[in-house]
Length: 605
Ligand code: G6P
Image (cartoon, rainbow, N blue to C red; front, side, top):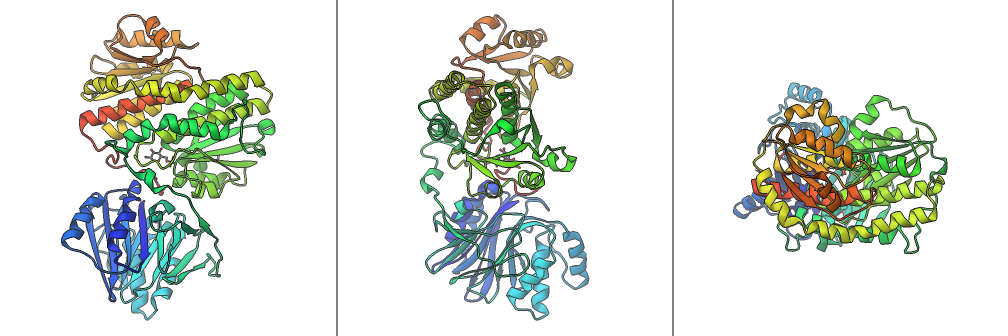
């Protein structure tokens, strides 16, 4: 899983390729590379690690040329070495690839027997070798690429560049997204429109099975059956300025701080001041018999929180599934149910595959996404953009709370449609949500206390997060955030479940972070905290003033949050959970925005 880019330009392309790759680094940063054709000659530069290493190499070993392709890698097949870095070259062909070639072992054996042995551990190299073999057999580059594509199984986005061809890129999409950009006498191709945003806002998306012959004069697109395909050109709006750190030390810090504004904007967009909801008119939950929420990672935890809301507020039965499990376990889906796919990027391969599985089995497919031009959005019946703006930090923050906001509004709509929520009830919930941006600012004000606490947390080997009700999935999210960026082992548990096993882990070295606003379940959580403290566990209580007061003696640290309602609490408490992860990572000196082994958008299964 990786980011790819290609440019047929009027000027030197190396700096532009690197700039575009910078915008794709969220897809992986194990290695990076570019290849260009300069006066007919194909050449490449690659470097292990982040893009900066490639930039440094290009300073000493520049690469000239006005046609080129580039790649930033998240390793699947083969370690993060220079030999395994893309572009992969075989004779007159260079290839960049996002996805997995599933039949690469068979192809590799066949190629070796034909005199084209592999030199790397990657699946991608077989693509370059196949194209080389077809060229050696006398096929021109375009036909060689076409024949190569016929032989590939799996999910991929590919770009081919050829020796001797200054005005040709072949691009193909099967499973992994690819966008073609149109310039003035220039053409571009990239894994997403964001990568191309500084170059053009005129985008054509390739569809499943398409391949495109790209020259500076334009792109000729063919569908899976080889017929000419007419794919529309759209103008996209991407505010490049928002992809800056704006004075913050990390994107994650900026994105945490943006949350009050993001949520206020989303509310203005989706809820009228007079207490009404502005969701699509045909989104009527009254006849829906069941909801299934499907997502991965942080988006999955947003779904788990929303399950409590849909069931409590709207009486609507709700299942939550991890996308990678959903389609392989033969889920029993009611034809009157709706399936909701939650994804920041809208490109997560598991979530997209789950969507396709659900396609003809449910009444409606709903997308809750941050990128409205994404594959998941484009394949859904109803799209609800969460309006969080570009999220760069690999650990999702503002997209999580914006997903929660969107799902809360959907649950309220479901409550109204199903006669469970009257106008006064809706107005009260909306008031609580409208108070959230202000309350979040209070929560952000805890940052200094949290930074001090994090100095201690950074020394822990294991940290537990506890929560009850809708705060339980938030405990899972708090633990995920912490392990993602601080590399400390952390687990989230339902408070009541602690005594059924995890309590064996507790001793004086294990901090236990309890997310517990003073609500109907609070007393029970206090009992669970007592169980921890009786075993010398160090309790960090996140609660409101009443909760901290009621919790009594023995708590190691308390963080006081403003009072809020059960609907708004998981959204508010996400902020200190994020700050705990952020400052613990800072205290440990890890790479906050690009933690090891992770990628922001996971486009392989
Ligand atoms: C990756 C990211 C997570 C994210 C998950 C789902 O694993 O590291 O932060 O939650 O993908 O991504 P999506 O774009 O579908 O929300």
